[in-house]
Image 1: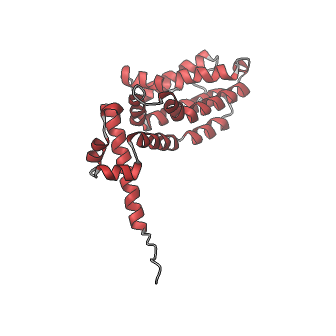
Image 2: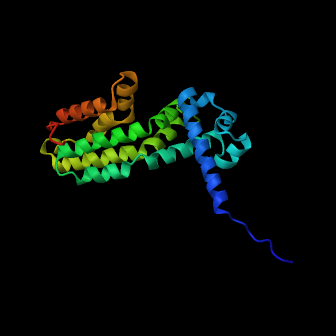
Length: 211
């Protein structure tokens, strides 16, 4: 008896990947607009133009879809490139400017994803773990920036690293960006400049020299 030959089509794999990407993108849109708790798998399927069974087969449950959205957002945020750029800075002002630019880019590019995550926090079965997962790389980047600032600046050196990292989270974390953009109606450029100058002045640096 001839063994059945396994069949693998690159086109079929690409189609499956495209479908998965479309489902996740529609899930982001719906979570951000309606709120995670008000969206069903059927809603996601309808928006993506597929059957509910296809959603389950492609990305799993609604909670699983959110996990995949978080993982993709972290990868797409560009945090590794931002950290590399920051650590290459030779003045604290330049490092702070790179942080302002990098966090602005990440928050602007992943704004709807962050809104989707926020909408899930009140109803998610493990909201603390979800937020920690979404922000772990972000916090690590700020911690590395804090260490670098202490190395570069005598005015910062005597402040504990964890305290500097906490201040950077206060200034450049996603909540600050959202407050200025969504609640205050500022432009991204205006928010970037304000946060950079506020942080630099508080840390005893000379904002403007990092330009």
